Length: 309
Image (tube, rainbow, N blue to C red; front, side, top):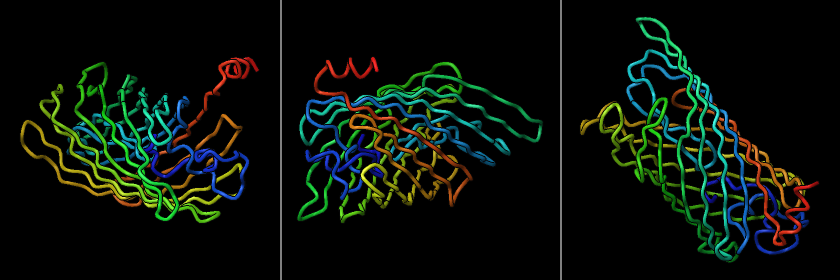
């Protein structure tokens, strides 16, 4: 999806319709859009570790990939919360045209949280279906006389707001943003940004608005060869304070993360993207994500034959 803002793996040449093996361009921008009338299957796995103190918000925003976020419930008022979270994110994309794609994905969460309070310690383990998202990406300009520019919009169709079990809200969170990049062999310079808006939702803890999020993400990608690309970047994030039953609680916050990544073109159809993000300001935490991407061949017989090998 386009919000994979830091740019991904495989050749720019494939995205623009030139030979896959072209080695003079970084393997980074092809995954911004799916080719027309083509399908792509994705499977993402993210580990997130965090250590937070004196929590005053009932929800926390967790980044699962470049430009991807989910909202997790938290235990308010705890002196310390140490958390390990594993997120599985299957996804599917379809190229509507040369410049437009439609995508969907959903997330399943396995969460292990240790809580320290004055009255004692506690532990929670949760596994649940988290959300379903639908979005569209569109390319407004190519990388020629001006830098390439792409825009995206997505909505969370259904979102599980319960700490454990199920408590669903529908259509209460969305994201709009852009990616612009300039390729200067063998470097791609990129700038991405977005605004994630959240509307009030009814939860077991009351009527809660988790707060909107604004993020800006400059990055750089370097093509080591026609198979490997290295990426690095910095993300700055601003989040509004939470609103509970019409009353603002806590404070608005800012957060900065350093990002490092590696893209590998496994084959013509398959690529892998590894991304790591570590907090440099705000509460301490780290996210590591691995995404497997498969381009379904145009000829279905080839797809069947590939699956048997």
